[in-house]
Length: 153
Image 1 (cartoon, one colour):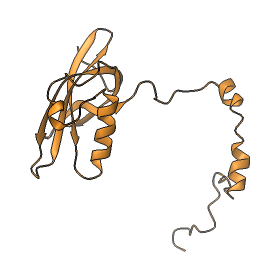
Image 2 (cartoon, rainbow, N blue to C red):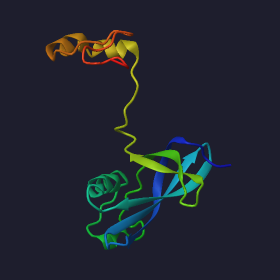
Image 3 (tube, rainbow, N blue to C red):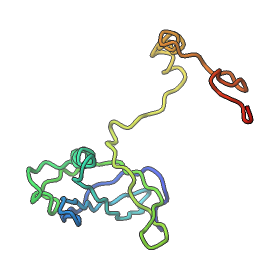
């Protein structure tokens, strides 16, 4: 049995480093996700190219990496055995099909949590007053904005 799309607790079980066709470092994390005794391995590639580098470094921190250089990313010696949350989604497999893969790596301790209505009331945030202070007015259903032009006009 395999996992379905969704959020799962996981941990890093392997790591390696390569480079893309432009010579930019590419980190491959081997991650094992589990739910109700069903374990499945996935590979998440982290790039150091352009703006992706920042998010790759954040992901490494979430995964417990505490090494100093790219060489420290080979194996799991420099990863703390921390639990992470992975978001699994169906993705293109590069062969015209799809496969289940890791979309995001999250810190399970900082993931957004839902609130009850009573908890929300305790926060005492007056959204209407804050919207009015910013001159934001709710749009009424079925009434077009003044700047909208009807079709044909």
